[in-house]
Length: 175
Image (cartoon, rainbow, N blue to C red):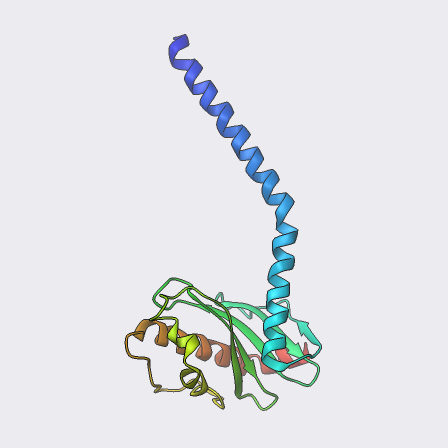
């Protein structure tokens, strides 16, 4: 009997100690991780609009793909969208929308797509520029050859930002 209980008891104690250490490590680092995410978001907004004051909104307006929304004092909006490309949640972009409701810029927060193929959505500026000036989701777009899934994911991310902006414009700009 002792031979069966003792290994189970030792394994249980090891699991409890490991779990407690993980909880402790999480509690110790969660504020630092949140601060780093906020700095990355702020630097992306600055890259998109330049040095400007912005206010971060608390809502994603019911869309799980929206990570954050910031509004500048002059009525421009930055919407962070995480979308699937070839990789699940591989496209993390900030879509800049000007005071007229048109896409004015796209900044990458991170990109988890295949280097050399899917990363072309970031590296080819002409691809990104086709979305500039859009006020509604476009029916057609020019995909990058060899990066079809990444191109479609990028279009979906931009369309998601525009849809959320257009459906919630008053709430977003009203703060």
